[in-house]
Length: 439
Ligand SMILES: C[S@@+](CC[C@H](N)C(=O)[O-])C[C@H]1O[C@@H](n2cnc3c(N)ncnc32)[C@H](O)[C@@H]1O
Image (cartoon, protein in one colour):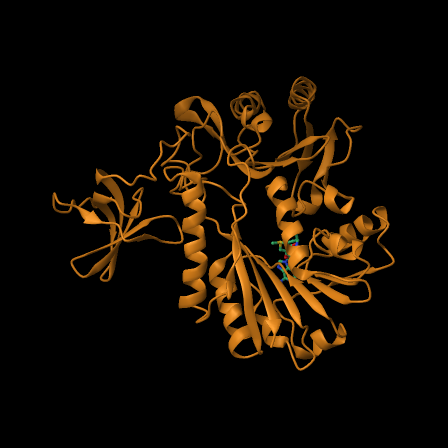
């Protein structure tokens, strides 16, 4: 770290960037300052210097923001999991809304006619999916189980995690002790967590076979703490239940639509199931599906939006890149009595073109929920037969804004409305919804 301290007067923080860092200007450069909030005057120490910008850590807060709050987690600032705990939760949402609007304006050269009210939920203990790193650290004489530190190199030494479901958060040190007892303690790099309605699953990624005594310890831990262990020897498709074998399946439900979705612990599901219910509900209200309509759900995963859309009586085509998720979506449609009005297609949507899209037939409406890379090829592929409404669910405002530019400036859509959901409180991740209508 090349620490350079600025003048005693400090700098004024003008805004927050998309990672929750304070932005200031000094000596003709932009300074990105971790731990600083809009409106604050701070001093800082720089750890990376470039010709046009510097990255820095806050040293002293000379004038604090009234929105500053005490971080609840003792690992704040070290753990890479959350970067916004020092900002009051409501203000985090306002900051995320500004990031969305700023991206739409700067990258998309557009803006929403209506900004939707933000959707809030519980701010602690919300995370039901997580990939925890595991590392036996000789110097500490113990195994660390948790998120990676901000530098990405080390595993944070955490006893509890405030954003994980409390049942799982409380197990972190005990999982460290469990690994410490294993013959293969250096060959277990990761534990994937999936919390369901009737069971909590921990998938152990193992690089070597467990010894008989490791297996016995796992069984005892599962019985004591009421979790189910799975073992994964290679890729996600190799994950299999280990103990207990008679546990109920992992599921989550969308009660508003009378839908329950079984899933495997390594398959994609939204990390915050309470917020997911609100998100699906709002997306469906915006999409307004009707019986008789033909609707596409692109990047449909296991059917999180497809099945609620199908409940309206519309015909829905779910398109997804993972063949395993397509099979899962088909099963989920069948077990919710929705097989007759759903169809699923496996397709790489990063390579879709006009002809491939046209082959899927005409759609009245579309829902698009891509990964962080966005859906540029899909929006470019829209032709004369484009749907009259598109609801776009995004986990990255930069790619949403880029895709919005194509929809608005090339494809004849109006950006009717957009808004944020606080899917990942205390992190800088911005989840948002946008509605586009053809002129
Ligand atoms: C943000 S998730 C949304 C899933 C689903 N809509 C949900 O709410 O659970 C994005 C989905 O895109 C899929 N995906 C990623 N890359 C893809 C690609 N190149 N083509 C098609 N689908 C892809 C992932 O498998 C994942 O299911």
